[in-house]
Length: 301
Image 1: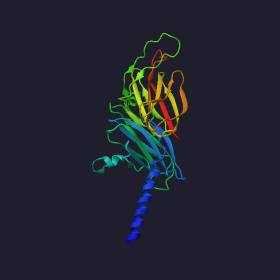
Image 2 (image 1 turned 90 degrees about the horizontal axis):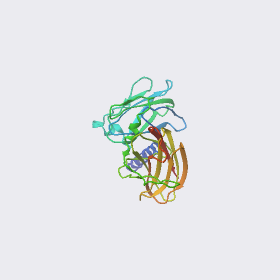
Image 3 (image 1 turned 180 degrees about the vertical axis):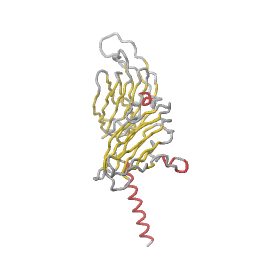
């Protein structure tokens, strides 16, 4: 009898472990403060939708998940950059959000003021295994400086850049010949680094007068290929992008000057953690500089 109980217990633990892995391995959809997105929980096993959002220390996240129709009952969970459930790290396990309003399955709430910058995860699912259907997820924020971003608003460009670094860019030597004038050296030693989410667009921005730099990291093995896309969403600044190996070797470099986007594939020479850095360049500076937003998307194969 004891052996049977032990086997049953072990089997249950294994089931729970693999269930957890399957749940959290889903690809996340990137959102930002002000996003309004529509999702759907399907009967074919896709009964959970996962979203990622980049937030800074001092920010507060507001959310509202609203079912379309009256037959879907929703629940929402939010996780830290280390994938720890927010309610578990609060004193006495206080749940400060995830509080059903009782109005037909809507979930809404506000996180505590966040202490860590990074990528937070929002998971939306049905309240039970039979709950399927469509819903709207509204994302709002209260930024550290007190700025309120409501669902549907465009977030201040400075908030995205706040997780970067105002790193000085060294001017290149004067060039009077004909040809490529070269690029300025860029110091990445103090750049904040954000883990990439595979196949999800990661957003960033550079202000019109700043030297903000963002670093996006991913792990890979020697011989892996990387499919990379780089897109300017708004603004007119010229943007440089570089992919650095763990040994600080440049494995890929490109620029958006008059182009709006690029797509490429390259092979990695060594294993380790790589960093994709995005920064302003001045090969053909605009007459009137505008704050510029962009996205980076990468997958490792």
